[in-house]
Amino acid sequence: QVQLVQSGAEVKKPGASVKVSCKASGYTFTNYGINWVRQAPGQGLEWMGWISAYNGNTNYAQKVQGRVTMTTETSTSTAYMELRSLRSDDTAVYYCARGYSSSTRADYWGQGTLVTVSS
Amino acid sequence: QSVLTQPPSASGTPGQRVTISCSGSSSNIASNTVNWYQQLPGTAPKLLIYSNNQRPSGVPDRFSGSKSGTSASLAISGLQSEDEVHYYCATWDDSLNGWVFGGGTKLTVL
Image (cartoon, rainbow over all chains, first blue to last red; front, side, top):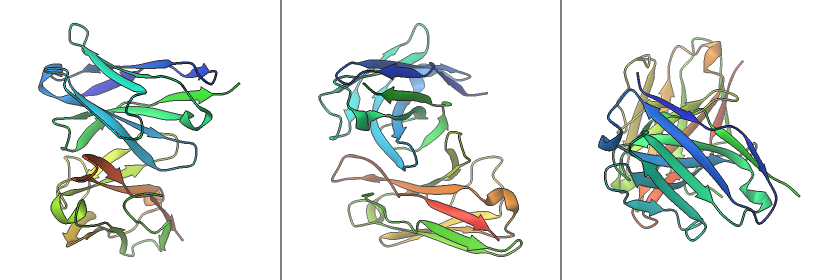
């Protein structure tokens, strides 16, 4: 069965960086891409971007463009999302979710990783 | 402020049919298909409806979706207590070149 398992919770200071991992199993990793979606406490969902696990092509949301880098490691079927220059409003649960292409549905989701930004 | 507009809350009694609306524009709902996600407290969203009206394997046929113009709807028939969770609509936005979500609707089963 398709599974996406994310790394554990992080606490960071403003201005720092965070890197969240998402290990995929149960399907051919390079046949799909990975979306990253975040959810601030008590708020809705916000799409951050998508990366192709086939060739590394990315599509980032305008809001985080310049601060985010998404990568994949095909040897371990793992996707990564690094967010830099963290601010308090980056505090959220970050989810990875499988998507065939940038514009197709996110079908399977990871369990989420809480990133807390606090001084 | 979310690009797609959903009512923050909806309610119904057990067994009843309820609908949740999702309003967008020409650059998103009107030109792309709509997905719906269900989110239980403290868990990841789960794909409930895709391509406007398709159910993934395992989703009961009590859940159905539709789209017309710049709006979409999720209908839940035979309302059950376990349906009392959050629902989000989502679609691709051609102008933003990215996914956009509704603000979410909390369904209450009275």
